[in-house]
Image 1 (tube, rainbow, N blue to C red):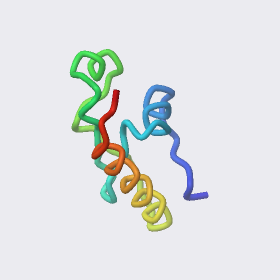
Image 2 (image 1 turned 90 degrees about the horizontal axis):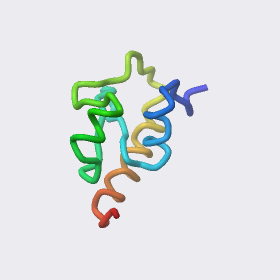
Image 3 (image 1 turned 135 degrees about the horizontal axis):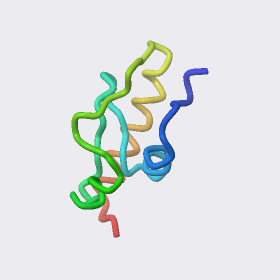
Image 4 (image 1 turned 120 degrees about the vertical axis):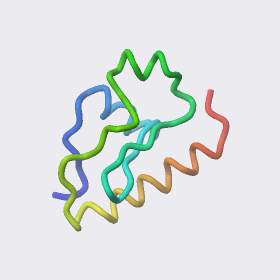
Length: 77
């Protein structure tokens, strides 16, 4: 139940590719490899956040955020 998020198609695709993630408070984390124009076209901004997080989501969000940060540490093309 908690290993899933209902996201729009554009957010879901970026999430699956670890180009975005969400921290434990639900705030969006955006890869530095996505330029400002692409973010604008996709309707993504740094103020976005998940509406509801339950304690069951936290382990999954933390695991995804950890992988996101590892990916950010590597060069993306």
